[in-house]
Image 1 (cartoon, rainbow, N blue to C red):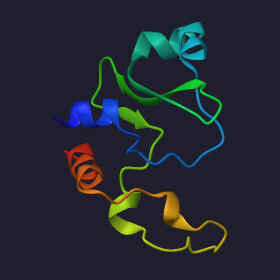
Image 2 (image 1 turned 90 degrees about the vertical axis):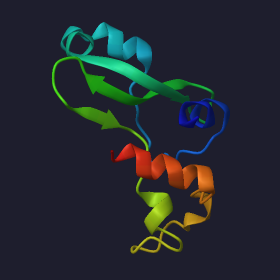
Image 3 (image 1 turned 180 degrees about the horizontal axis):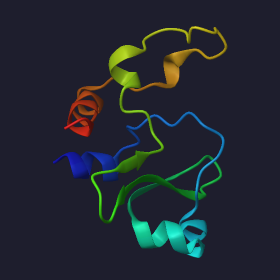
Image 4 (image 1 turned 90 degrees about the horizontal axis):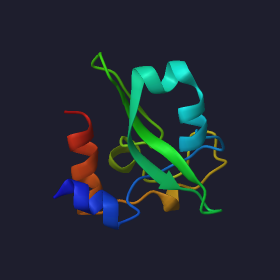
Length: 102
């Protein structure tokens, strides 16, 4: 069920300027030999980037989205530069946040 929510809805919050494209990932031998892509997302220019990857051998994962933000951020950032109105707070997002830490 959660997988379908993630595939069909823009319910993760990305707040960054840089990402790794799948082609860059595959061009770096040490990266693709040790990690596998779990999920990708698209930026505002419709460019794909890796949003989740996991180690092939160890219990390590890397996330480019912020599963913690929907549960804890409802106003302005502490530095006051970005209003968090872009952060989704639906029931589905809450489920993703909880499952992401299991």
